[in-house]
Every structure is written in structure tokens, then in C-alpha cells.
Length: 266
Image (cartoon, rainbow, N blue to C red; front, top):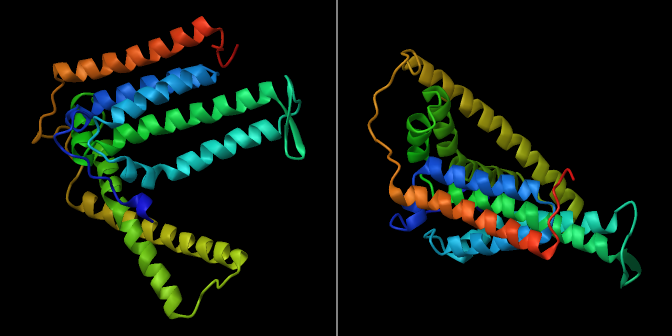
């Protein structure tokens, strides 16, 4: 359950110092562009730009890959399924073992996989370089969201690492009772789903207790709150937003110039 333990970037890295709301806005800009562009060229250029931004994140490639491998697997699965299970194979026939697929289907499948990977990775890069407390403060100060929502989201984010500990406890408890899958993959899946159910029940109970404790302490009783940690938008934050817009613009322009750009609803 390493996926639930937070990444710890270098706090002096440029992306780690950026305003959380600006990072979310930059990621949203990239996501909207990738969602609207139904081609692989735009997604490839955006992914190259995001790979360059990783160097400014203060996170190692190994740490990111260790947490984002499910995204890679999901993108690969989507690309394969959309290529092999298309209702009609168009383009030049390509033989892959016993299967025959069309070149247009392969291009479309790769493009869809790259788009999904870019959409997911932009969000991961924005959230992994953001402290949860600073994000909650920025949501209230810059985006003017409700403190109840912002601090509630902060509390939920702070509880995520506890899921990893709960998973280990459930695994050890089942092992102590002699519940093991052995070499059976079916039993392993059944045991894993049982542990996930127990994890969900524990999370709901903990969330209920936390909500009751916050209400008992008067959280949300007053319409206004003081600000202990001011969040400001600096010139570097505007440059980050402009860089995201430039990356999206260049990617779409290159795709249009090559004749590959296609609007998703076109």
C-alpha cells in the first residue's frame, strides 16, 4: 500500500514553492487541452513537457514511478483494449501474432492511452509537490472556497497514510489466523477484496469519529475564520501558469501543422 504514503519533494524545488491554487489551475489547463484533443501528437508533446517539469518538482523519477505505475498499466490497458476490441478495423492491416488490426486503430489506441496518461500525470505532478495544509489554505484564500470543505479535505488527506498502516495490520491479522492464498490466484484476489472491505469499514468509522470531534470543537460554527498561514501569488506563479498555457498552445499548434489534430467532438 505504498500508494497511500505521501511523496516528500524537496521544499526548495521550484514546483514545490509554487502556489497550490496556481498549480491546480495549470494542471486543469493541461487536462482540458488533452481531453479536447483526440490525437496522440498533442499528448506526446505535453507528456514531454511534463517530463521536463518533473526535473523542477524535487521528486526523483524512481519515487514517481513507484507510485504512478498503476497509471502506466491503466493507460497501456486502455490502448490495447481500444485497439483490439474496436468494432471495425480501418487502415493498413497489421498482423500481430494471430491478430490482424488496422493501422488507424493502432494510432487511435496509442493516442487515447497517451492522453489518459498525460491527464493523470499532470494531476499527480501538481498534487505530489503540494503540502496538504498549504493547499487547504490556498483553497480558502485564492479560490474562496468554504473553510468547511477545505479543512475537511485536509483532514481526509492527512488520514490517507493511515490506510497503509491499516492494510499492514489487516494482513498480519489474517496471517496470524492462518488465512493465506498459497499459490492460488483466485484465493489471493478473494482475500485482497476481503481486506479492502475491512479497510473501507475502518475508514468510514474513523471518518465518522473525526467529523463528530470536529463538530464538538465548534468547527464551522462561525462564518469567518482567521488566517494563520497567508498564501500569496508571486510572479513565478504567473510564469508557471503561462508556461502551462504555452505548452498546450505549442502542442496543439504542432498537431495542427502536421494535420493530426482532431477535436474530440469533431
